[in-house]
Every structure is written in structure tokens, then in C-alpha cells.
Image (cartoon, rainbow, N blue to C red; front, top):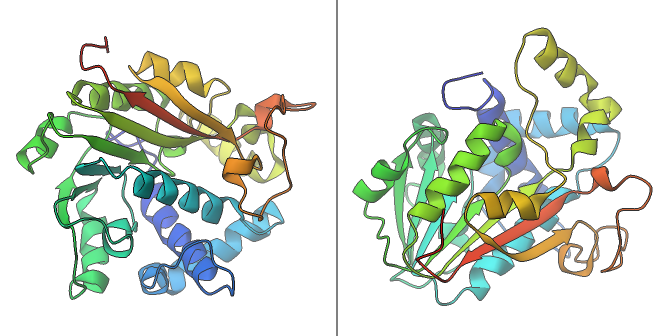
Length: 284
């Protein structure tokens, strides 16, 4: 494991195949969103990685488009937000495609090599909002770098950690939530996806799990209690939605009733979680 709390080689590869999934969604006749730059950002490497991933799992990844649309809706509905922080931004293009207001500042935090690859594709694209890059160790003290880039604790903020937690250690996830909460002195939301612990029992995950155990590395982060995770990080629960429920479906997944309890194996549930802070005196 790297000093950043992420697993070596996982971040860039994941960013590429996630972009490939967004490119495929954008080409559908009924897309949940349109990302005009996703194909170029993914490249052949990203497309190959997506194919390999889906061959290993035996099914098309329908989760990424649903997750992307869910967090798109969360952000565009937060018309009060003055700042957006994308933690582990990867090949995210929300600053370019969501037509955010000109006074909105989007901070993207990730490794410098991500920004080099990204800017090679997007350098000539006009922005309506303001975008700022922050090279960051997300398991370390990334807050000071964010503030140097112009982040204002007193401004209302939406934080997104899309597709990030799984690639961090548990300590890094909890520290990230606490650090974000400490930087909030005004209204704020924090959105993230949290995989259930049952994911680690899937056959397609076995090679990764065996490799991690054999090399004495921690397992990817999963949790069956996302609400408790938010609370421990200083966030009150706004929304907890399981994949397939009405707010996290968009006609792409098997229907799951709003009161579904997880069925025979609740640990398999993947949750889209949103926390909030309205009171700056909340303990963190």
C-alpha cells in the first residue's frame, strides 16, 4: 500500500475504466448523462480495462452510470453551493459538463499524473465555473493545500467522494470524513458510495483478496453501516439509498422497494450515502 492510503496501480486504472463506462453510457440512445470527453479520457487502455473487469464479473457494470447520475442530481440540486470539492477526482468532468454558475469554484483533488493526463484532453475546453487543481495525499494533510488553492471554510460546499472509498484503507476513509467536516463552517453536503462487506465474498473478487492477504495488505474498504460511518466523521445522515431503490435506479437496475431490508444477505447492499452539516458547532 502506498503512503497515501491507496493501493498501488489502482487509482489511475480505475479512473480510466470509469471514464470508459461513462463514455459507453453517453453513447446510448437514452443516456442518464452525456460526457462528451469521456471516450478521449478513457482511451484504449480504459476501454480494455472495462472489458476485462466485466469479463471477470460476468456482467455489464450498470452501477457506474447510476452512481454518476445520482451525484449529478445531488450537485445540480444544491443551487445554494458556492464550492464543490471532488475528492479523488480522477477523470471527472462535472466542472465542464454541468453548466455550474460562474461564481462556483470546483476544487479537484488527486495525484498530479491524473491532472497531466486530464489536461491533455481538456485544456482547450471553455469553463463557465472556476476550476482549481489540488495535488493531494488523501490519507494525509490535504486540507492546507486545499485552502492554499482558495477553499473558504465560510462558503457553502458540496463534497463528493465518488468511487473513492473502496480504494482507501478504513483509517484513511474515517480521517477524510473528519478532515472535510473540520473544514466546514457553513452549510455542506458530503456524498460517497459505500460498498457492502459482502462484495468481498464475490468470486470475481477472490484474486484481489488473496493477493492482498498474501502480501499482508489491508482489504479494500467496505462497510455495512454507512450511517454510522458518516456520524463518526462528523456528518448527520441526509440520504442513504441502496442501489435499485427509486432514487438510485433510473430504470437501469432491478427494482428494490424503499423499505427493503437487504433480503437474505444485507451485507451485499451497496449504498449511496449523503451526509450534511448545517451547524458549524457540531463536534467532529
